[in-house]
Length: 294
Image (cartoon, rainbow, N blue to C red; front, top):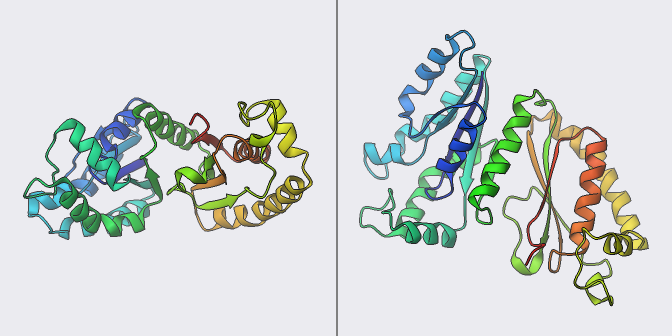
């Protein structure tokens, strides 16, 4: 059975994520009491294939029921997941996160009380929750930062990842190649990060400034440079070496971030080039241009 366990910070998008999974055929249960996890899996596993995909949300609300700051039940989650895996089920633990200022803004917009704050302080609640959930983040098979994601972006990403998983491509590494601009900050979700600001910038070339790396003229300018060719050769050799090792160690998700100054020209060209190269090698790839419209 395919099981996705969603956890993470309040306000990071868990409710939207589990609805996205429900829409692609997962039986979804939010705020599941942790002691019931194994019993629930046994029940679904005995249903003779009627429910082969299960999505669960477990988070700090469990500790609130037990008393704020009590992480006893949460501490059992990794062991429970390991026990479920030993029964032959495929389990992903997805930790959802966002920057503190983003979480604060989301709670301010909805005017909801933070579930981990006794006094109603949102920032205090965020701090407590981060502490309670830190070991779950360490145990996660996938960490998803939603600070820059709209509801629609999150839905597409969740469904892209887990539709591919359900199509039996588990033996391959699910890879996201992301372009970004250093002036807007480094992507927190990056596993590998490459700085391509050493390549001549199309921004300073007449006729190219207003275009992006998706335009053929910009791509030609970037790819024809000697430095670009050398960099791509080294990068492809690196990937040929490390991707099989990641797969051997059981890594399921990889985010490769390629950054230039503004995230509109050089990084976009190289992200497109590398995503196409990875696809030719049978690696499932999602491409994302974080800052191309800024």
